[in-house]
Image 1 (cartoon, rainbow, N blue to C red):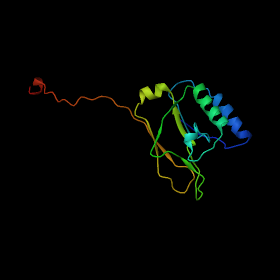
Image 2 (cartoon, rainbow, N blue to C red):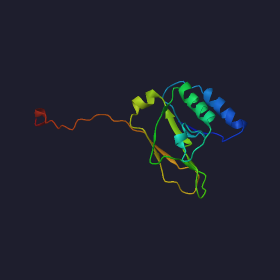
Image 3 (cartoon, rainbow, N blue to C red):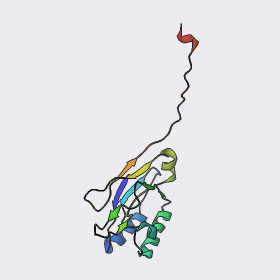
Image 4 (tube, rainbow, N blue to C red):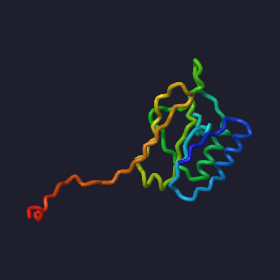
Length: 144
């Protein structure tokens, strides 16, 4: 599991994207999550506007690494500028690979209640369902 924090502007932001592209992932049981400081669509904001170039850059990185998004549950936005008429955005993301989804199909990303911070915390629940028989069978040899 890799937790990231992406810079919001400047040359560090470009370095962050380069770093993401250069990740050497040697198996598909990785999860990469955190504050990427990017959104994937204008629908990830509560107000009009947004930087279409940033959207293209971020989605290109996701496609380049063949990442799958684990959708956030609980609220649509994870960040607020904390103003009277707030700008709300989903800047926090959880990504993984198809092998992870196959092995842990019930993985969930739950957005928790925000307290005093500008970002809402995210709880990751990792689970799998192994079928179990509910049938009780009595064996005759148990008597002896």
